[in-house]
Structure formats: structure tokens, C-alpha cells
Image (cartoon, rainbow, N blue to C red; front, side, top):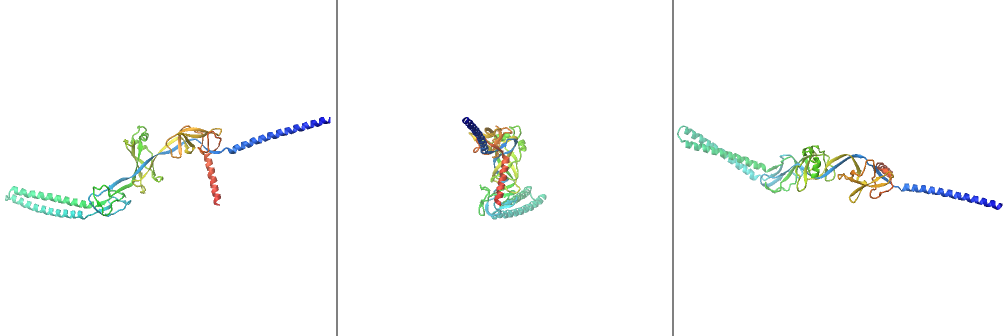
Length: 405
């Protein structure tokens, strides 16, 4: 009896121990699963995403442009002579009629003096011929001389008067040539290069001008557009070029250093003929140049704005390319990335794309780590890109403030 009781007691203890072991094992499995879940949550990366929404794009076409003054006038002398004085310097602002160069005046002053002397002689000859003609007329009236002799006197007077007019014209011409020895500015503007200085021979036939005066009060930016752009401008020919120009928005000029010229310009003319060699039409935009900042001969880029409404605009960094195809990572309802092909407008600003197909408003796309950290079918923890940027900026400001203490 005693042995049976002992055996029953031992069996009971064994069952209790086994139950305890099962209970402990079950609790251990639950703890492991929770730990694994927590580890997975820690390993799921936070990735910046954005929700695609319709908006407006403010893009622009860019064209290489050459800048020219309102007028660029080559200055050449009207008479030949050695340069005796240069009155201006390169780049100097001048007014119309201001002296630029003086040529040797000796021979031209001598020509004036000679013409004046000949004019005085011609005047004397006219007076003498007039006295003779008057005297002959009185004698003819008294029938003392013949009509033939009287007519000869009149002819001599007419000849002397003609020679007087010739002498007067010679004086005018000589004085004009003398005035041409002072070469003046043909318009307001800025002086260009001066290749010839004192002692150089100048002549009307010289290939290289004495200088160029550029009127830069207004400047023109010349650029070219292709046939496709011209058709787009005129709505495939439904509008005239004049109407298209009137409806065009103001254009901007990007200077060679990348900065934007503060004044907006306006397209003034578009050539109606397409150059067969280039396939392009010439366009001229006009800009005010109140501070004289722009100079003839400079270069830049003309930006013609193109505004589109209710389009999907995404950052270029949110896309990647494979074999000339462009993709984005769309985040599905399970927070997994789905590689999605898209098409974009060729026109862009270097930072954003206008999506033409492949995306819909309301979809979430990855905007961080595309092409390196993010992979297809990857589990992520989406974070709003704007909120993440604000958070990072706040942390950076805090670190900077702490570092300054």
C-alpha cells in the first residue's frame, strides 16, 4: 500500500513538472515572436515619400542667344589722312556728334584757302563782266555797236556767273572735306575696339573700321527656334506670327555667368522664313538696358516660359532609368515598393519632371534613396518627405546651436 501511494505521488509530481515545462516553453515562444517583430520593425527603414497631386508647372524653353546693341555702327572716315588725335577710349560712353578722331587737316585747310581765293577771283570776274555787259547794252541802245557785240558781252557775263557758282561749290566741298577730318559719333552709345591710333593712315576704303559705336539703350537678343517650335507658337498655323508674338509671355535672359538679368524682355520679331541650312527661324527679343550692364557681343540664354496647369510634377531624383525607360517606386497599401514605368515631358527645369503617363493623383512614390538604398518589393516605413525635411532641418539647427555654445 505504501509503495502504491509513493508511486502515485511521484507520478503526480512528474505531471506537474511536465505541465510547468510546457507552460514555460509556450511563454518562451511568445517572447521570441515579439522580439522578432520588434527587430523587424527596427530593421524596416524610414523612407521619404510624397503623395502625387495635380499642380502647375512653371518651366521654360531655353535657347542660346547673341546680344547686340540697338545699333552697331562701324565708324569709317569719309576722307583719307593720318590720324593726329584720338579723343575717346574703348568702352567710353559718347553722345551723337561727339568727336572721336581727328585726321591731318593741313591739306584740307589748304584746299579751303585755295577755294576761297578762287571764289574771290570769280566774284571779281563777274563784276567785270557785268560792267562790260551794261556798257555794251547802252552802246547798243544808241546803235553804236552791233547786236552781235552786245550778245558777246552778255555771254561773257553768264560764263563768269557760272564760274562763280562753281567756285562757291568748290568752297562748300573743301570746307565739307575739312569737317570730315573730325570723325564724330554717329549716335549715342559706347565706343568699341580702337585698332588704329595716332599716326595710322585712315581712308574710306579701309577694311577695318576706326571703331564701332553701339547704341545700348535697348539691346536685342537674337536666337533661333526650329520648325516644330514655330508650329507650336502659331498653333500649327491657326494664328499669324504677329498674333503669336503679341500673345507670347515676357522672356528672361540668363547671362553667361548663370545669373538672371533683372529686366524681362519681349519678343519683337520672328522671321517668316526658315533657313534651309539650319532648319530654324531667327527671333529677336528686346530688353531695356537702363544701367548699361549689357554690351553688344555678349552671349546668354533666352528662357521662354511654358506654364502647364493640372499636371503631375515629381522630383527628378524620384526616378531612375533602365534601358532608356524611366521608373519610379510606388508605395502600395502594404508599404512595399513597386517599380512602375512612367513617361515624362521632354521639357524640364533640371529638378522636376512633368509626368504624362504611368502615375495617378493620390499615389505615393519614393523620393529618397532611389537607385541605391531602395529596391523593388521592399518593405519600408513611409515618412512624409516634407515632414522629414523639416525634422532634419530642426535637428541640424539644434546641433549647430549646441556646437556654438
